[in-house]
Image (tube, rainbow, N blue to C red):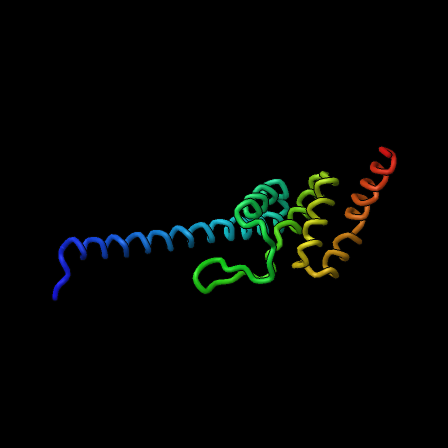
Length: 141
């Protein structure tokens, strides 16, 4: 027996809605991934302010750092940690307290290897940031 025209229309509508929902989810996933990749590229080119904006957008859309994050379909991003890179940007911008907070967030997530975080914090500018925060916190007590 053949399906009625109404049933065929409902099936077609269901397929369209299913396709639209999966496309919207993929677009959303690509969006955070694109912000993250743009942020990393901007940071490497020396534009910390623009990089920070992109990384913050990525973190708002996908706040959980992960070892393996699905971007879309069968594509994955390995080592997704926007907070570590936000800390790098904030340090460059002289926003030391925020840099320390982002670095703490990154360390708690455990995605960026501890050795990489240690190497970052041992750089002279990073060390000055941490000392500055320690001194200002101690004098406020």
